[in-house]
Each structure stands twice: as C-alpha cells, then as structure tokens.
Length: 189
Image (cartoon, rainbow, N blue to C red):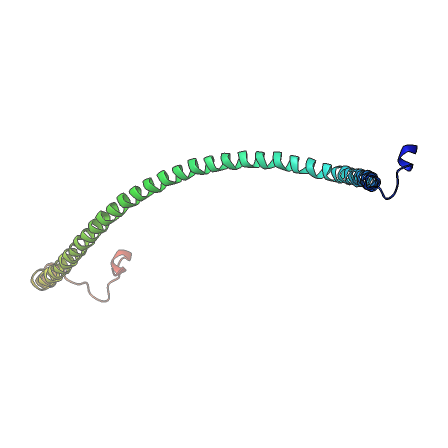
C-alpha cells in the first residue's frame, strides 16, 4: 500500500487507481445497500407470507369446498337430468292420457246427448201415454156412470119400491089401536 502512496498525482495511473478504488467503494456500498434492501424485502415477504398463510389455508379449504360443491353440482345436474327425463316421460304419458280422456269424454258427451234425446222422447211418450190413459179412464168412468151405475141405481130404486109394495101387500092386517103391543113389536127398526 505504501507503494500506491508513492505514485505521483500527476501520473494518469494514479487517477486510474483512484477511480478503481472509488468504483470498488461504490460497488461495496451498492452491495451493502442491496443486501439491506434484500434483507428488508425478505423480512417483508416473510411477514406477508405469515399474514397470507391463513388466507392461503382458507383459500385451500375454500378450493376443496369448491371442488366438493362442483362434485355435488355435477351430481345434482345428473339427478336433474334424470328427473328431467322422468318428467319428460311423465309429461308425454300425461299428454297421451289426456288425449285418450278427451276422446272418451267426446264419446261420453255424444252418448249422453243421445241418451238425453232418447230420454226426452221416452218422457214425451210416457206423458202422452199417461194423458191418453187418463182420458180413457175418465171416458170409461163417465161411460160406467151413465150406462151402468145410473141405470143400476134406477133399477135398485125400482126394486126397493117393488119390494116395499110387496111387503105392504103381503103384510098381516094391522092390529087395532087399542090392543097392546109386545116389546118386540114396539121396536122400530
């Protein structure tokens, strides 16, 4: 080192050596400052890592839960597809059943309409028959009243009168008023 101090300051080698020495110092300072910055950065990263570790764990748990939800979602989608197929089949069968029921209802309507028409005709026929029967019964009753019962009453009255007339003619002679009648004879019946 003493040799370096013996160099003349006017010598360009001196200045080259000074520049090199200064460069080494600047490089050393830069290295120290870089080391300090790197140390600080490492500490910041470590603190950040410590703070982020629970978040990473949560994210990991959430990721696992997300995977489970995705699996469940796929299962639900599969079940939904199966259920959709069943509903589609049920809807198809329901449509077919509805078409059959509509056909049957149409036939039933037609049968009921025909039955109602026939019933109406039968009710009218029965009503006419009852009316005719009533007229015939009334006519027969009038006929019997005028042709049978009326003359039978007259004949019965004539016969009753004839019988009384015969009784009067055949009856014993009356007893004189001053004669006593027995108990039976006093009974008027």
